[in-house]
Structures are given as C-alpha cells and as structure tokens.
Length: 173
Image 1 (cartoon, one colour):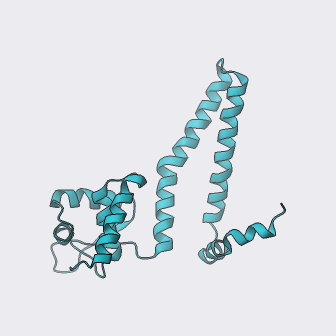
Image 2 (image 1 turned 30 degrees about the vertical axis):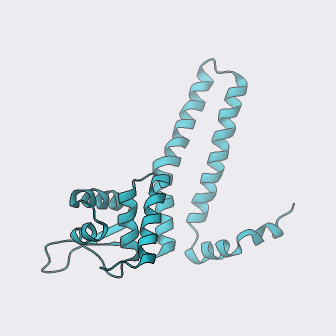
Image 3 (image 1 turned 135 degrees about the horizontal axis):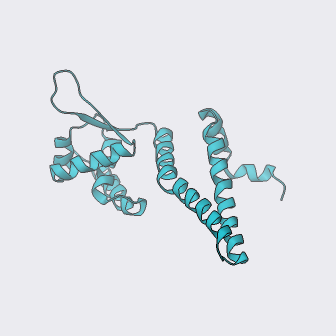
C-alpha cells in the first residue's frame, strides 16, 4: 500500500494524539492506517507500511480489538486474518465513548459511592462529605444523561447533535 503525504500526515497526527488519548503512538498509528485503508490489511502489511515490528503490530491489534475498534476476519483459503477499523464514524465514536465510560467513568462512580458510604461511617468533616456528595451527584447526572441519550435512536441522536449550540436559544436564560 502506498501512502500519500496526506495519508502519512493523518497517521502521524493520529499517533501523536494516541498518547493524549491514553494509548501509545504505535497503536494509534495502526488504528489510523486501518481507518483510512481502502481494504482490510494483514498484520504483515501493517508492519511493512508503518515500519513497525510484527510483534508490536500484533500487540497493537489485540489492544484495538479489546476496544472494539478493529475487527479481524479470515477469508476461505487464507492463513492470515485481515483487519479493518470500524468504518462508520458515528459507531466508532460511540464505541470509544462506551469503552471510556466502562473503563474510567463507571469505576470512578463506584469508587465515589464507596467513599461516600465510608465517609458516613468515619470522622470525615461535614464539608468534605458535602464536596464528595456534590462530586458524585454531578457525575451521576452526566452519566444518567449519557445513558438516556445513548438509548435514543441514532437519527434522534444525530438530530440533537446537528442542533448543536442552537438549542441554547430555546432554553431559558
């Protein structure tokens, strides 16, 4: 596969962003390549195009599969899996948000609930208890909103997104 300058820039930028998103550069570059590749690629092809060690590619593919961002399939008569990224951008973003919620936000909610219960049993000062409770309530509010919106049909979610900031005009100030 030949990479144009624009394709290289896309892959390099996605890789740089990987560190900010909580993954390493190689994993993000693998995802970027699979995201823009016209056809699914084997691990060997990915390794060759990105000049990465085959073991690094294998590890990266496993991580991306764990995030449900990359899928592998094998054609009849082929020995190797071919990998592709989720193509639908709405679905891709939804999967990332769901995984981050499951890995980061939900455990934090559970920890805050435990901390709040513990604070009720020990000598935690009242103002600290109130701050913990406010933090938990705010996070639960956002989580409840997200869960409600995620249950809406995609067309309704898209309509709300397309409204964007214009919805603020409809709300009381």
